[in-house]
Image (cartoon, rainbow, N blue to C red; front, side, top):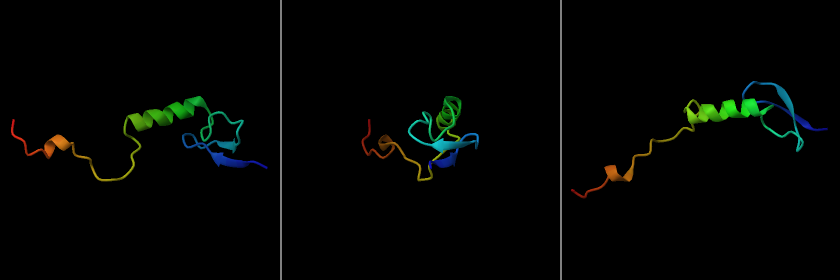
Length: 61
């Protein structure tokens, strides 16, 4: 018996198996929607903002 999981994009139940090409997504469309959300920064991993090193430089040009 294979485990069933929800597609992170649309919520559709899918079987978690090696045959499921797009897991954890139900389709390539849902996979691309999720990728677009990351690219548009709709999805984020919490943490402190990273400040570029050049802002910390003591060198005067």
